[in-house]
Length: 404
Image (cartoon, rainbow, N blue to C red):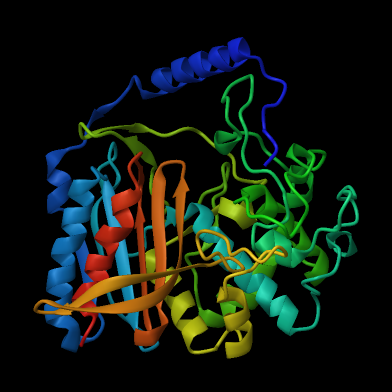
């Protein structure tokens, strides 16, 4: 892989790290302890009474997750056999204003937005409007030609060689926390469009949110509609999903939480101010867990896509040199297997498809267990450093609803 910072001297790298650390510490200087009363704020809804016992267990797991990761709030929803069976929210959506998190509270979902972009790509593919293996200039003619052809399939599987976020020599020092407005997705391509590719497309794997920014522009070109309009008309409206939208910077978003960074000492501070107008398709959407579960239910019931197309989107991609990427990445979905507890001392190995999202002030996980027709989503308004145990904690909620 080509070094992202080939021209930097050691001195400049050290200076960059010092400046970014100072900038980070200044942003964290207003941290405060998370109020202890947040644990007493709770809302839940049981949609199917036969899951009452499971919901009681899952409620305790949700409370444990919020406390374990020092979160202002955490919200979860579970779907089984095409139906939303339970949802709950614990904590405060806005600490300063003491606004409780509710089932309608929407959170930044970060890279889980890529799943929604994948679905949009799949619909256009089904409709014969998008050729996954055509040069992307067919749909985004303004994107500069590279030495090799780049396709939508490669963008969706992170095998196109497009770079990821990089450091900057001025605040905010990293492109991940960019706070600059763009008129549309195409304008936002200017951030990275002139960069050299990291490798020959199709030969390697490099996770790239910028690749998904470009895929959003491909969707616009193939559909003849703005990305957000296409989602609303072709995905959300048919399913009566009202809570998934763009994380607008200067526009009111109903029921949107406030977003925080938290530390191991149970302190919080407001997270960076960001503008996501360049990355709706890679990490710029907000949603409630119930909205995500409705979306997952529709996928499992083939209400959005055919079984064949959904299989295409969720099958891990193989590079041209025969290597599978390390995370089982497909076209907008990761694949995994894990041991799940299904009873007293009994475990079963189940495959699942999923995508997480770490964004400014929020963390999300979206999980589908096809063999059990189960969909689970959890969202939080806290960003924390140690995310390794987050997925393991979420599996406990899934286990509460799994049967032998």
